[in-house]
Amino acid sequence: MPELEPSFEFWTKRLGFDVTVSVPEDDRLGFVILQKGAAEIMLQTHTSSAKDVPSLGEYCRNAKAALFIEVEDFDDILQRIEGLPLALPVRTAVYGMKEVGLYEPGGNLIIFACPVK
Image (cartoon, rainbow, N blue to C red):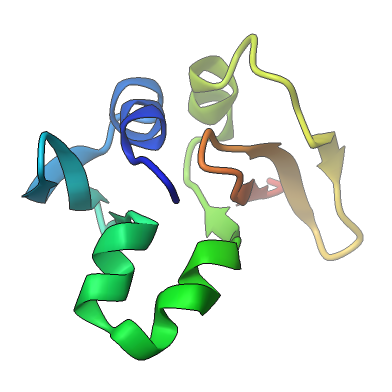
């Protein structure tokens, strides 16, 4: 990610994750660890990644992630992402999961899923 701030706000303000670690990089964030319940997300800028592990610098500059996150309260997620453009409208998958997906501000695909009850 070139910058963390847009993604950081999405994860904390929209989804309710708490900051457990933050590492500044100059006058911005370089690395953060966010946690909600048992889920933990780590975000790092391209620059910070390249400093941390130089051999992965170029890979990290071009990489995107696709996350599949199982949640207990699907309605809560729908409320938290209300008004955001969806990459995957709400659906029930053939394997019995209710799902919804979107791209977070860093460009990573997130699919939230909950077992159909």
